[in-house]
Image 1 (spheres, rainbow, N blue to C red):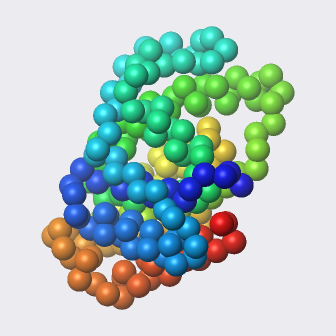
Image 2: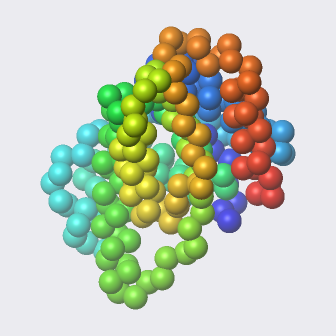
Length: 200
């Protein structure tokens, strides 16, 4: 277990929207279980787009030439978090652009892990990440499938796996829809309390 704070990433470009409400309700549950959660609003950070240059595939540190923006600080928060939570809306059956941009920038961590394992390094035991995805659509058989698959492979280089019970919410479209659903908010807070239990 890492020693850093419980950390909740709010991944929507829209302040005060439904996935923000979901993430903050989850954070309230973490607080109930004794944590002082750190809230990271991804929209407040600057992450340059990966150029696909391949520079991170070479060298012992697998450095990215775009270092200097906020990406490395965000990756450090992922590595440091004792409890890790991502709350995001679904846009066109996938994750919003800024989160996908951060995911693309994690290529250097993927290259580093592959190289280390080829040299005999054994990865630490994986820890779970909690995921809350919020869709405006009510229908769609594969509505969350792409986002969950991308998050799975994004987190692998950090020795993080998706939790066994991701929270997948449908039909919250207008900005205040979730904020007025007391039952959903209570369920999210309960999930947060369970996630935080025993990880203080």
